[in-house]
Amino acid sequence: MKFLPISFLILALATATAFAYDPSPLQDICVATNDLNSGVFVNGKFCKDPKQVTADDFLFMGFRNPGNTLNPLGSRVTQAFINQFLGLNTLGISMARIDFARGGLNPPHIHPRGTEVLVVVEGTLHVGLVTSNQLNNTFFTKVLYKGDMFVFPIGLIHFEWNIGNTHALAFSGLSSQNPGAITIANAIFGAKPPISVDVLTKAFQVDKKVVDYLESQYWFDNTK
Image: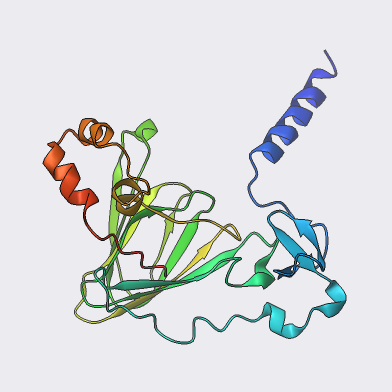
């Protein structure tokens, strides 16, 4: 019995490891490379030879210019995830710039592999998140002003909507080098090939014509 606490400790540590997302790096740097012949494969990306790394590998300039918000959503997400910023490899972090036209919306979406912290730099945003059915799909919402910060826990549906009279700008940090982004409407009604109409009519409890109409729409992706 005296070994029981140690057993529980080992089990707890093993469980913590099993539920971890991005692994902790075991080297100083592991800048990703798309050259599959000159690297070592680490968690989805090959590592560039450290002797070939330069300061430019740790620089991302994609946030310098505003994103184009002339689209149906009136918003644009500029991602600095691992695919856009190879220097993030194995570091467990990423960022995004979100530009909003007046009335622009970053529609309900989830990040399956990362928690998001959002900071408003300009404008006024109405944000919200919905919990899982574990908490009866509770809806939390808040109006954010310049300098305010809001957190969206990993995997929960959330959105940001510009309710101000001017453009808005926000930056977000995420707890994964590749947090992913699944826009709910796009995934459900814009799936390729389409999800069965019978499934969707039963799931949403609507007439088949409603589903046919929604599946026929153009679902814009504001991350591209």
